[in-house]
Length: 317
Image (cartoon, rainbow, N blue to C red; front, top):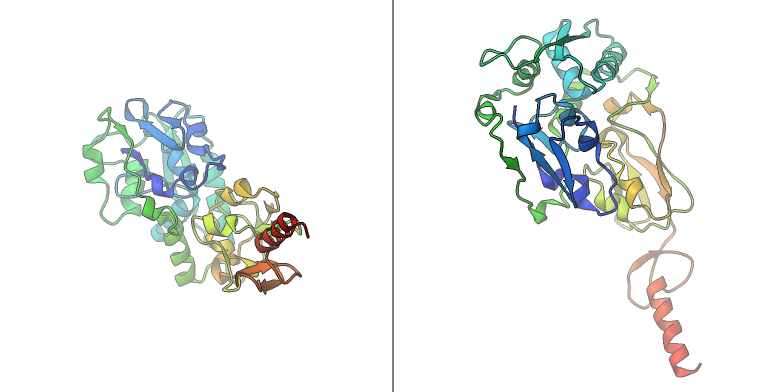
């Protein structure tokens, strides 16, 4: 595998307030480094453990043909195989692969499916040459991609730093990682979770709450990478689609009031029913002076009210 970073997907590029460093913290081999708002990759240090692929919420760290690991990807593979799947990882790795497997198996049980993901620790998992061992990370990625990763393997361990190119026009575009797209497509087509009342704490999705301190500054829904948070045409509410939430916590990082927070339990049926929840409503008015839409009980928006106040002070009135 060859690991690279798609900067347009990285939440650190969307706001300087982002505290996300999941990929860096999970890497025990210093193959990923923070350089300002950028994540640098050093392939000479990479051991192909794929931990960074699993923890990145937005799919910014990728392998080969835009591939990524995680609970959603394992779920898709387990369902497509229709039988138990033995997943091989390297021995003595510090990353909690068992937690990923346990969470996947929990979702399989919620879907009333008998198959399980089984975890095996081996030496140099998935690094056995061109013919991948069934269950290895390399074999897993080939199953998750119709085209496979043969081209990506050609650039394996080149020793070059992959820094990528930043396309500013894409920073505001909504993006759903391949693993989430495939997961939701499978859930929708097969009708999984529609009748379950189960709730669980998930590593890759969360429900949200907004309290009364919210001033509708718009940062959360303007910066949400997946479009899970949005507003109305009148900008008088914050809406939330939990099945699209990537748990990147960018909304929480950018909120100066700390009005938005994550809830512990996620309703599993939301993956199937795809609701759009109203987190908070505002009383919207049109400013009599500038025509802008704002929230409040006065005739003027805060900006125009301040300008009027300053003008009165200058005139001595």
